[in-house]
Structure formats: C-alpha cells, structure tokens
Amino acid sequence: MEVNPLHVSLSDVIKPCERLVDYIKVYDDICDKELCDDIIKSFNSSEDHHTYIDRSQRPTFTEMNISERYTARDVEWMSHQKQVQSHFIEAVSRYIDEVDLGPDFPVKYAFFRFFFN
Image 1 (spheres, rainbow, N blue to C red):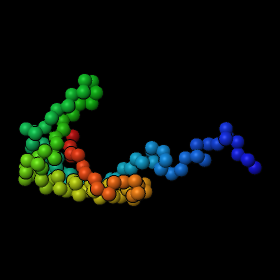
Image 2: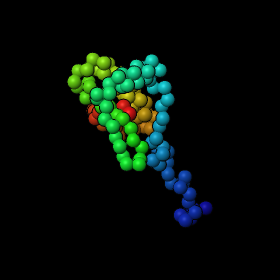
Image 3: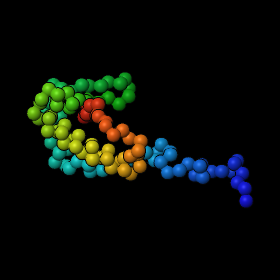
C-alpha cells in the first residue's frame, strides 16, 4: 500500500531530537542547597557589583557577572565560579549524551561568562 504524501503526519517525518522542544532539558538539583544558599548570601552582600536591568515595563532584575569577580581574583567569588562551572560542565556532558550531540558538539569549547540574577 502506497502512502499518500498528503496524509503523512509530522510524527512520520520528524524523528526524535529533530524538533526544537526535544533539545530542551531541565536538570533539577544540579547544585546542593548549601552552595545555593552561599551564593545567594554572597550575591546579597556584593551590592557594589550589581547591575540593575530596567527593561521598560518588561521584567526588571539585578544581575552580577561572577566571571568578572573571578577575573578580579575576588576570593569569595572564585570558589563560587569554580563550583558553578564544575556543575555546568557536568550538566553539559549529561545533555550531550541525552540528546546524542557528541558528534556535533565541539571537542573544545569555552564558556562566555556566568551571571547571577
């Protein structure tokens, strides 16, 4: 029996991880509560390094570039940066495996900057 191309559903054509939603993953509890609490405490006590983002009737927020603090050799933030980066590398590795991106993912990659909002 020949398949009429006009009666083919998207699921007949689209394979796993060919839809953009297949590439969206959420990983809960990547960092332990203690690390999160320490980062929040450090963020709240580092107001002189905050940047307020006002997007005119859109969400506004305060952010902090912890990579700048790492580069400035801020002892408090150097540890946080290293821990967050380590957790991020673990999550990226897990993601690459789960969506089978190994052949398509660069062997060498770098992170731009880490921000907290």
